[in-house]
Every structure is written in structure tokens, then in C-alpha cells.
Length: 248
Length: 248
DNA sequence: AAGGATTTGTTCGTATGTATC
DNA sequence: GGATACATACGAACAAATCCT
Image (cartoon, rainbow over all chains, first blue to last red):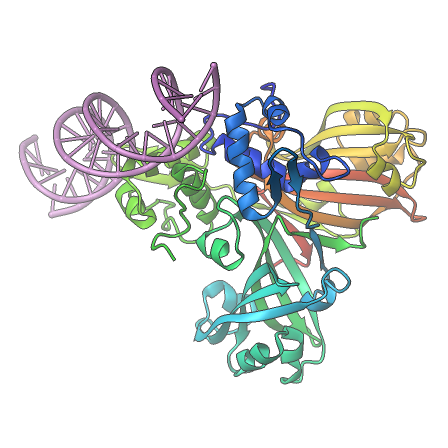
């Protein structure tokens, strides 16, 4: 093991970005004291085994992101924004899931189109290959911060006009009511992670190099018929996914 | 949006690494024809909006990882290794979960120590602050490939000597048997994602810049008493986490 | 069998970004 | 802040292996 914690040279990832990532992801909480003050730049430089300038570049990037705040003569401080905990289970719902964690929750309609279903989507929704589907591109926000963006597919025949109801209410659950779907269940969710692409960066207002959690899910109505296939991307810095009860 | 898909300049992440990450992810989807052949270097360079050399360094990195294979005069080919699907639920168990996906599953003991419980651990396990716990560092492999590494904590009093039973059997479930725990449940799991640190890179044999899925979980025995608190890091390239039924 | 087209591999040079001291 | 070393990225050739006609 190479002396310094988690910093790799010649990896294709600049040292300042590796350090910024580590500070952002929560090492900040371990590094900071009760007042949220980080160690001095010199101390950080020693800890990571790099030059002070390199630490400064990392800090500047985080200040730009709003994660840190640097005050000349006093020190560098953490701007606290605790991670939201997003529950995944049979009853997965955006707004209800974040109740108590954020005052205001809302979904925004970014885009929509009626088009031919990709093969995987048709199979998941149990539609004929090439059937027409509604594709919905949405952005979920909590207290004004972008939390996730999703691409969802619905049977175009059954849910024609769904996008209008969603745009008005900002809620999938509410929009379903207009189609006599009073209840629905999350049958399955597959979770993976990757680097944010350029659309993620823009829509979720992320910094380059950020990581997104990708949840691919299938919702079914009461009779067990698939009604919604979706891929949701969460900012990994702002959200963790919760399976089962809350952690103590 | 900047013409080329998902590539950000001046981001602190080298272009070749961003491209390598994208190719690695996209293996399942678009890239690669029926024979597993990638588009030519020139075509990829155009697609990503970079020089051919830059694509080449990305490909070389993936060849080094064993993801791709390049043959002069013929092309570049995918070495298929589909992602494992790791189920998370009340019955979360490593070996049983990957049944049918990998022939050989095994846990290896990397390290262990009896020590004072960190505050968060003591609280999760419902122990007195500063109680003694067993810390277990393990590596899980499937068909010889490293899948995940975990740091688990157990009550030192109740599970003294647990590490020996685990080392012999390679299974947490089996080791529990020696302590009259015939059954246990996963009460909760919190899932996040981050860049792999240097220990992850070495233990999981990852390339620098790789992403790990982090699952923090709490297991309880039949009576509901917490018995194991663990943080598991999965290679995001090799594993996806599955909540609920299998995707179709 | 010969030769041209395609595709990966190699070698120059040059400019810019990153990190150190 | 300035000088230096190294990594990254681009451009233009040319070489070598493979495929097809």
C-alpha cells in the first residue's frame, strides 16, 4: 500500500480531483472539528501526501460547488448538507419517501415523447415488440435542490395524456389516479453506479467527475400488470438508497 | 449540450479515463456487434470527439483490465463478463444470492481484530459505548473474481472466535451456526456510491478511478437483536444490487 | 497468388495541463 | 510567483497484420 490514503498517481484522475472527491464524499465530516472547520491546508497536504497547491486546487473546486467555504485568516469550513435517504421497497414513492427530510418535494417534466418501445422496455412492460410507449423525462427536486432525474416508459395506449397530469401535479402517484390506478407496487429495482454523463451534470447541477446511482425499476398495478419501467439517476453525493428499515 | 456524448474537458478527469469508463459501462448496450467487435478506433474517436490516440489509451487501459482484447488488423473485441446481480432483502446472503450466477462462491478472511467499538457501531449493535467488538475484514469472490470486500463488526462477547469459524468455512451463515444462530435477517441496508480508495483498488483488483457501491447493513437474529453491522463495497463494474424480484 | 483496403501498432513532434519545489 | 518535470492530448505519418477480391 502506497503510504498516503486513497490517492493514486498516473490514474488518469488528477490528484486535486481525487482529493476533492474524498473530502466531498464524507471524509469531510471526519476531518472537520465540531465547528465544521477543516484542518489547515498544510496539514491536509501532508495527510494526502501532496503539495499544498494541490490541496488548494481541490478546495477551490469544492468552494465553487458550495460544499466548502474558505475564510482568509480563519480557515476552511464545511457547508453542511446532509445526505437524503431515499427508501426503496414495494411502496417506493418519491414524495412520501422523503417526508420529514425535505419540506418541499416536486417532480418537473423536462421532456416527453410518444415513440416506439426499445426492445428491453417492451419486454419489461409485457408489450408487443415495437409497441408505442410514452417516454417521460423528469427531474425530482427537494427544497429546490435537484435530487434525481428519471426516464420512464408507459404504455401509450393505456396512459395517453399522462404527461399533462404529471406536469400539473408534479407527482406520478397523482397522475395515475386519472387512469384509475389507485395503487401500485415496485416489483423490482436493480441498482448500479457510474460516472455522471453530460446530461446528468447539467440537469442535476453536478460537478464533472461526479457519481450517480442508477436505479432501474419496474412498477406494477394491483393486478400485477407492469405499468411503468424507469431508469432513475440519483446524485450519489446528495442521496443514499435505503432498503428495509432506517439505520439507527 | 456539448456535441460529444458525456466527455468533459478540463474536469480533472483525463479524457482517456472518461472514455474507458463509458466503454466499460456500455459493453452491455450499444457498442459491439454480434461478434463482440467494437467500432474502429477512428469511429470511436469521432464519436467521442477526441483524437485517435486518446481512444487508444482508453482501450489499452481496458485491455489491461481484461475487459477488451485488441488484435492487429482485425479489431478490438469485448471479453464478455456479464454483471452479477446481487439480491438485497431480508434474506440477504452472499453465497445463496449468487447461486446460478457463479459456480464457486467463497469468502476470504483478510484481517481481524478485537477492539473498541466506534460510536456508530456501538449504537447500531445496541452495545454500551466503547464495548469491545470483533472487526472482520473479508473478501468475497465468485469464480475466482473479487466481487466485494466488507468490514463487519460483531459483539466480541457473544461471538468470540467467530473469525476462526469463518476462515474455515468461508461463510458467515455457517460461522453463525457455531453460536446457535440458525437464522438471521437483514433489517436495513443503506446504499451509496463513491470512487474506490487505494485499499479497494488493491483488494478488489480494480483500475484507478473505478466506482464502488457501498452497502451499509444491519443483521438481526430471530429475536430482533442486532448481531452484525457491516459496510460492504462492491465493484460497480461487476455487480448490480437487486431489490425485489429479478428484472425480466 | 497478388494487391488493395481496412484496422491496429509505432514514432515522430508540439501544445497544454498538472504537480512539485 | 516562477522554473521545472511529467502526464495528457493532438496531428501526421508510416508499419504490420488481416481480410477480401
